[in-house]
Image 1 (cartoon, rainbow, N blue to C red):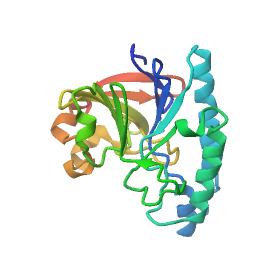
Image 2 (image 1 turned 135 degrees about the vertical axis):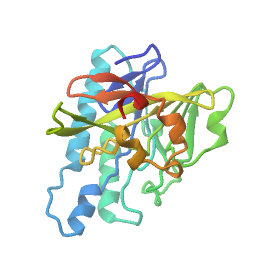
Image 3 (image 1 turned 180 degrees about the vertical axis):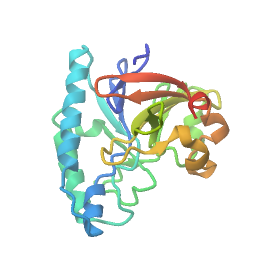
Image 4 (image 1 turned 90 degrees about the vertical axis):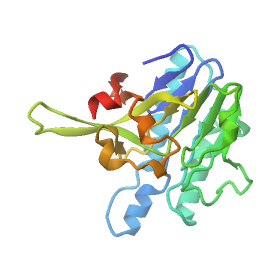
Length: 245
């Protein structure tokens, strides 16, 4: 699905005019934390992230656009404490991305899991603003992103997904999705998590899986948001949450 101002590419959001790629919650170190709990899972997260990015960057190039900046909208890391493995993962991903954009053009926004700045250079920001676009994590409301000049706000944190089932409700599958709607006279776009392991919060089960304290968008507003489901090759429009919940 595409809009004249932005394009959904896989699990990311791209603004062609600005050349900005917005990326949802990475949660680097999630697999490692599962291992620490005693569950044997392979360390595939960093490799999968690199592979996904390569596919996304290639699609941007094929569409004739230029990638100028990458904005991570929070929860770059997973653990609430310091983890040396996470730090190594972080450095590996940043080094990889510097093959595509300049280091100064990799913007890191602070999420609720980002209790430590692994760059050790105060790179974490509460929000990032460029022109009429604002980017924040979505767990805290910052008045600056609702400035009159801002038209579109991009957030994450919610990890939106949707549960789809057959007519007999025998087979049920969960898919990541984008949410697009209005709040305080701004267009709000909520990104799915980039984390491959967990799909996220089922918006068509919103009464059971969502509380207003969790995000800056209240439930009464969120149910009017439109759902765009991430498929294998494209993103599909599914209408508003209130019509599918």
